Length: 302
Image: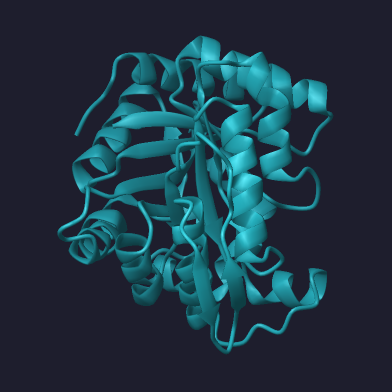
């Protein structure tokens, strides 16, 4: 199992670049960038790639609604060429409140929207011509860029339809606010079943962690900063399946022995990569990153 690093991009570009350079130096497998209220993740990857020429780079995630799939394929392949084939393209639909309030799209038939989007995006990334016209997407043509390898395509997923699509139409899944039990009992079996006959799917799980003497403080911080995530339907269903009250219950917090124990549980559950999101005061975050870097360099495997 690999260990990647979530990069906090809510800062100046120089700070983001410095974190990616550090993540590469420390031995993390990939640096991951989200699409929130600031930097565009694919443009950001293009900008930082030359400064850290070895580490893998991924989006977690680029949003489907505001990107036409042919346009997204062209942007992703351009980024892939710029970073020498190190891109992993993670995509997802986001959430109704964001799609409707921020982007002005109507959140209608989201599962069908994602399925139709992938019906264009996946072949377009392979350089194939597409002609798809459905209730949610219309696309005709191809993306012609020479000598660019197709980036792995991952889908953010929590519910059964999306997990099926992650196995059938993509190269695996990105999931978050999930514990080892939910991963082992629900996420991994569904994705693997859908991917039968195809290469083994990637299972990337976002893990909020803190190497700390005060785990309760770490959970209180997450409850305050990210508690609203527990009200979003897709996350709420995942939490309910594991009997968890909110995102704070998924935090991995404690001493080195506790953190390594839970990391091994994720590996045993079928995760192929942990995407680390460190929390806590600066000193604790630094210790957390250093500890997970040791695990990353030790090539912890399921």
